[in-house]
Image 1 (spheres, rainbow over the protein chains, first blue to last red):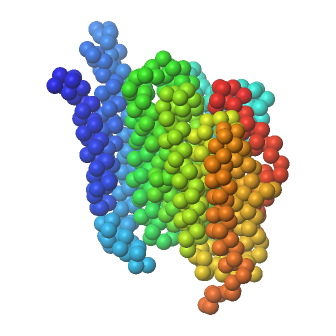
Image 2: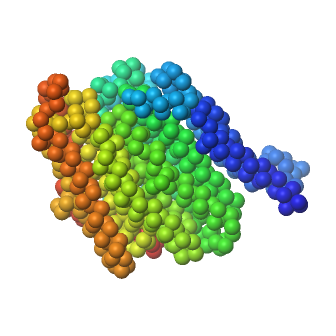
Image 3: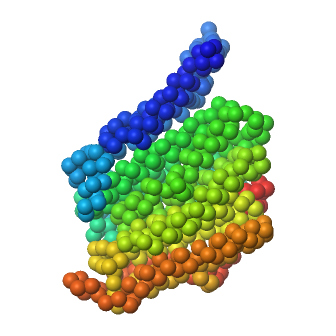
Length: 118
Length: 494
């Protein structure tokens, strides 16, 4: 039990990661796929933030009263990854809009059906 | 004065050109700008190759003056300068070709955006190759991937949209896997610089986090390079993208991912860890061998010829990964040479199909019947590049297969050598189907008579076709440098 509690954020990361991947694989609705992808990516953001934590450390802002800081580098890295995630989501959603215009549906099986008829 | 800054310019020039292309609001102007920048990038990669050969050791460039490992380091050695050369060369030649093709396939108000995406994609591919920082690889990977999704979605048929969406989902999963792996490596070592990572990993090889990181990174990159069975995104993406995009990404995108795999497996984790302590050799060998046969067999039954070439790419990537998985000097030489040669073959073949699509508006085999009588030069290009794909002597394809068979024999894996030889006739079958249709069958009823493709498309196509012949006869550039690159991967210097 203490093993689970001591690594609680890592357990959350793993659970979120699995939920996200499962949604991407199992759902046929394109919007839901993107939602799953977002959950998956968010779990990785949490992983990075978790590993930046230094026991007893404060926020990485220079101040005379503190000597132990959290590692700011993963924060910066993940800021970049969040930007990438936003770009991916917006491009994905834009594609879904155009797929809806072209096919009249955003359900994967209905799209496949229409493609087979061509 | 400018020479020390070439590594930065290699990436920065196309990066700046991308927003400028958007601002032109004019297809022709954007094309001229993109063309200028892509040829400049090619010139820079040639200059870098000469610099690296003269120096005999890696050139490092500290971005913004921050010394590595704190800042991002660009590190040019014989392996990645070789990849830079082929990527920028294909990028420049295909762009020359793209003008007429894009004029036909992309709406006029979107052409400048097309070229912006194209140079952005080039930026990403060159960036992945030149950087010496693991996180920087992720950023450039996403720059190239995002622009590729947008480029594929510009295809004329609506299937291009679903192909792009599928690639977006799988590509993002692959890149995120890579990101997880890099995060775990940073957790254990506290660094992201590739050289630094390699040194620090030597002390912590037994940590479970390193093993998990290794698995995530390998699977993530295998998805990006379309190793069987992770290739599902590739056939539709290549088949439904605009012609110029197919030619560009088929020749470069997967090759750059192969480079990342080579760099991480050999340059970061190291041969002893990946092939000694962990069974990476077997894990890659089996899917690669299946890819060679399954890819070729499926290619034989395709009606859409672009799709056929896409499955052929899955098979050819199998050959490259086979070389990678054997981890000997000759095998790595074969992998690196094939990386270069396959880019030339697929670039040439997709350019040929672009020419045909430009005239008849289709790349289906029944529509291509008898086309050789009307487009003799285009189809002659297909024949020569097709021979190279099969691996006939005096073409580039022969050189890489020759070294791969030698590598198998050196190790005493003669069944593998036999298997590689047996796979060649499969390529012969699918190439022959097209040749048979184009040369021997009558023109289908209802197809309008067509003319030869325009010269501005034919010349770039033939540059790539002749390169296939040139590098099949004169191998000093490819084989010698690949040999050096293999030595670098195995022993850390060349």
